[in-house]
Length: 114
Image (cartoon, rainbow, N blue to C red):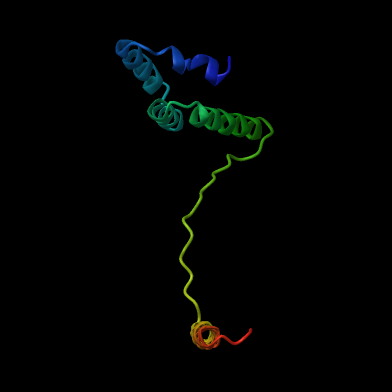
């Protein structure tokens, strides 16, 4: 039986049904499934549960093939700081652009063609 068939979230209309369901879910000792269920209940979509089921299927297939468990981490990107020469180049271009814009505005104000 698929995970989504076991977790018939849309049928949980009564709060007592929801409480019973969450207690049963907690008994499974699967933090990922519990997190996905809570997220699914909050947002009203099945996407978190589908993603969790897909993750579980991939893991079980890997384990059945004798491969090790796949641990996926998405580290937050570290902000990159420009090198001093890049900062200098950027500032030089900004100043050059500023001067060109002022020159263009003066020409346009005098009525000269571009």
